[in-house]
Amino acid sequence: MSEKHLDTFGEILIKKVRDLTIHNWDCIIDGEMKGQRSKEIREKLSFFNDEQVGVFKELFPMVVDSTIHHLLWTLEEEDGLELFVEVDQKVNRIRDISDGLAGELYTEDGWIMRFSKKRYKEL
Image 1 (cartoon, rainbow, N blue to C red):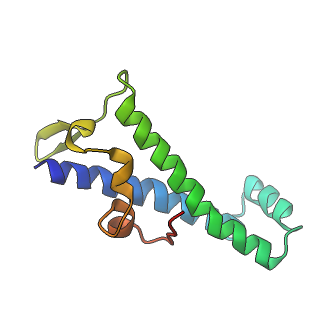
Image 2 (image 1 turned 90 degrees about the vertical axis):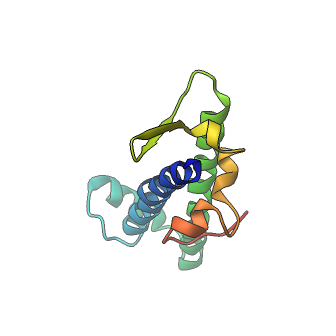
């Protein structure tokens, strides 16, 4: 049952945080978002050539992944923070069911490879 709790948490984190963040920024950069903030960002990027914008788009998922990595490490290491996952009316403390939350992101069996629809490149 613990594996199911971990996968539930990982799938939600990857789909609703990682993928959605990358999607939103792709839309901003590609001009699909029309808000004021998006316009200001595209204006700043207008000084970049296509190759430089491509590098930015390539790096952005790595920044997102690094942020998620540090969030998971913090959730595991900070005693004052607790995160519980409920599946099928059973609750587990997430740090108790993983031998390293940040490590759950990586490898061919990790959350990113299993749950993400967005581009991924290991550092």
